[in-house]
Image (cartoon, one colour):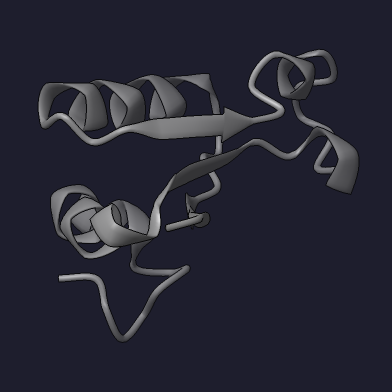
Length: 79
């Protein structure tokens, strides 16, 4: 299965929390623009946005795990 977008973290702290939760629960992920995105913090430009991607098969589990962090991006699915 392919990777799908899980969440777009708002800052470094939120990204660290998301990575910790996913690591602790054995969910494989990839952070698109992980290092490039922190070059210009505070500037919400499309080229420096970090996106946490998970395998499509793990999406529901990851959404449940992250709960309120994903409510705005998946309003019908987050619990």
